Image (spheres, rainbow, N blue to C red):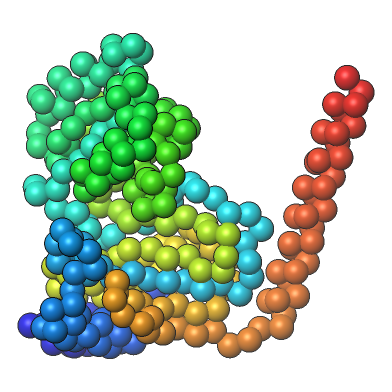
Amino acid sequence: AHSAAAPDAHVRAMSNKVDAAQVTKAVAALRKHAEKVKAEGGTKLFDGDDDDDAETYSVMVSTRRVPQRASNKLVPIPLPHPLLNLDAAEVCLIVKDHQGEGHKDAKRKVAEMEKCGVAKVLGISKLRNNYKPHEAKRKLCDSYDLFLADARVVPLLPKLLGKTFFKKKRQPVPVDLTKKDWPKQIRKAAAATYAKQSAGTCVSVKVARASHSQTEIVANAIAAIDGVVDKVVARGWANVQSVFLKTTESVALPVYNALPDAEEDAKARKEEEAAREARDAERQKRFAEEKAE
């Protein structure tokens, strides 16, 4: 078992706002709770879940202001200790093809390249023709650990995959297959966790599995907190109200709380008002142009 040792300087240096000692304490408490739940036989949420999937660690960043607009776009947050082990994981790679052409080339390329977890290559035309029923989509969604897709076909996927993938947060991650080094692109995609801007004031992101050590969970949590604040939260730390850590079956433990900031709230309101006015002006301009036509 890993003790709740003080974090090393590298971990401490990774975040200038969240106290790594506080994160370490929270992780130690969550691990203890997970062990207790497991001992009581309550680890599995559903029949067929393995322990790793049933117990994952997540970071939740709560913002002061509701975002101006939500987005389904996945934002990659690199983690020092990947969630997936590509030696054991099964990845489904969705590729661009035209009436089946291109799919064969991709399959051949995957067969020839070094092993990096790709268990299935699925062409867009096959996805369109063979996975129309809801049950087929659901089965596909449950069959692989990670879905990756050629970035050029990502806009077509919501319609072809249906709501199940998005509800379960399993939508395919875009990869750049115009680059020659596919294994590098696949490893890079698998080494990140993914966040998106929800319609509310909470951004939640998965950071670790039960199989990670305490030190790895702490390092991943801090990297994820900084990544979410930097890449997803509008106005960064100024807009962060609180940060929590939780597992699948635990309560959320606070690791950061901001004090009220009237100046920041006034500044945010001003920015939001300006953005709203700009959007209204753009709408009116488009309306006037359409009317003129």
